[in-house]
Amino acid sequence: MGCRLFISTVAAAFVAASPQAHAEGGPTGDPKRPAIQSNRWQEDWSVLSDPALKTQPLDGLKYIPLFATSPESYVSFGATLRDRFETNHAPGFGIGGSKGDSYVIQRAQIHVDLRLFEDWQIFTQFEDDRAFGKHPVGPVDANEADLRLAFLAYSHEFDAGTLKARVGRQDFSFDLQRFVSSRDGPNVRQSFDAVWADWETGPWRILGFLSQPVLYRDNRPFDDTSSSDFQFDMLRLERQLSAGIELSTYWALFERASSDYLDGAGHEQRYVLDLRFTGKSGGFDWDLEGMSQFGSVGDKEIRAWALGARAGYTFEDLAWTPRIGLQVDAGSGDRHSGDGSIGTFNPLFPNGYYFSLAGYTSYANLIHLKPSISVKPAENLTITTALGLQWRQTTEDAIYVQPNLPVAGTAGQGGRWSGAYAQLRVDYTFNPNLTGAIEAVHFDAGETIRRAGGRNGNYLGAELKFSW
Image (cartoon, rainbow, N blue to C red):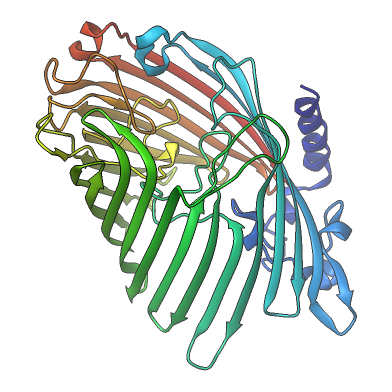
């Protein structure tokens, strides 16, 4: 619990020492100063070779030059500390002995970023993730004293385009992180032991990687591992159609030595074809994505699919710049048990933020409709309210909760209606290094869940995140 006292003390010091004028884009700030990013390895602190930009405490550790003649060669240290209090009245709708729980999850990370000249990077990040008072503690809740990232990267601009490559333990996410994410919602983020290559030229980008997802264990320090028993590979193509409008597609292989579904188990070899169209024009924004999955689990064929759409309009000229949005999602379920095929959609590596942090909603066997309204009463404050309506794609399959867990007693029982939830989320930026968020969700369970022994769910999360 001492780390939580640490975050309060250090954050308070930064609030006092770092006025908003020093923030990127602030009224008197320098826009060249890098912003803190979710993926810390993407930050470039070479701009601090200019002493005039060293305006915050400990900037001497953010940029340590290695050679007097090469400002691009430096070492940078950093840290991230996130504490979130959560209370969940009915995890898994309270079925199977699940009881309400209140706890604190804490993610502490430190990193060392070594840059050599303009092309090379060696990035290492260690983590210590803990769950105080949580019962039970799962693999996404705690991971004490382990290696999260360690990779060698190369990037070079040629006349024809830019080549980027990475090898080692890394993370990656795509699009709205519906299906491939670094899993920032739970306490333990997802990493991959991978080889990555990326070529960018004009409006085109082509990338590919071979990876083994990291499996997290919390038995002793530095015991996380990956193996050929679990693989995820991808080839992706992107095309910038115009300013703010993009079309992308990818082909992927998700392979696991042992998988267990309601209608089959065994070696899983799942091929994925994904297509996405996204853009902004005027006040409109949209993101449309479709995925087809086929292959096999044991001796059964896979025939699964999913669709996702988010669209909205932002009233830039109105007070608080309100945005009205609509989200529509659908994922296939298994229509006929014992017929030699599995239709249950596998959401791969989803981000819990996409639906809500409550965990009541998964992409498997789902039809989901969610209108929302977001407002910004201040530049650093965003308030979002939403109402989610949920049905099953087929009543022959179960109702699922995140990430892909069937609710006992629901497969083949009841009607399509699963329930509805109301969501309220508040995000606040105290300064460039400190952010906070509160999220509340109430899920009104449908009759199928109630007949299976479930009940309504209530979730509340309050988060404070400090990054240096």
